[in-house]
Length: 181
Image 1 (cartoon, rainbow, N blue to C red):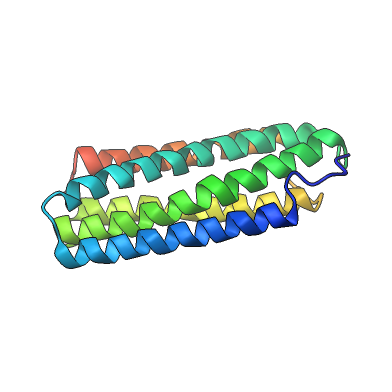
Image 2 (tube, one colour):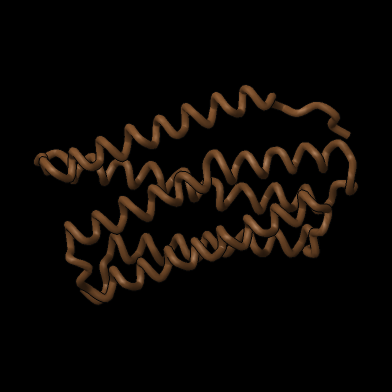
């Protein structure tokens, strides 16, 4: 079993200060950009949105795959402890920030680009709500794994891994084809 922490408390504190500083800088830049509304803003926000969505989707595909292997690992063993660290870092460092950026920038783009009109946009938003619900489900499952209380088999996790794929397909169809427009 792992007896040492991967990072010390002081390193964690430094990382926290850097993260809060970065968040403050991004918020300040966002307010300035919103205030001045330069012509290039919409295009760059679309880029940011696509990067955030890709990052979030990678996590939504990878975390259930980690759960497949974690479910087969011996509880309390070194591999199980390693999976806990991997799962927590994936959730906290990649998935949660990417989800938040996807939502905030996506809603801003929808509001400024479409005025939230069109059935296709509401179906897309419903698909993203489904992805968010799945994200919350995975977060809770990661906590259960960390406590040694997983209740699903590796096979069930393999099947759960298909949920974000189906939702992603719905969202992409709504964005590219725009049926019901």
